[in-house]
Length: 105
Image (cartoon, rainbow, N blue to C red; front, side):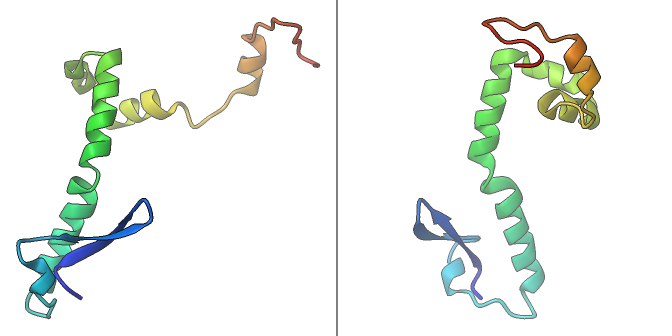
């Protein structure tokens, strides 16, 4: 292995150097922990940066970014993804039908 990370974008293979000259550096026992750290940083931070920035820009259209600090990680997860528990009875009690639809059609 080399100190780079293979990837695919739109069907094209791309290799990302994890550090300058990484394509020319062979991973050995002596540098394997540095390699693992570089891969983790790339996969968890650098590779996701564009997606994360797009998400935050969209979220800032809905609320002031400073408000995010008011929520715990669990509360923010629930705001973004919704509840893990789906209450069908609550849905039925609070659904208003129109356009020719009703609970049986």
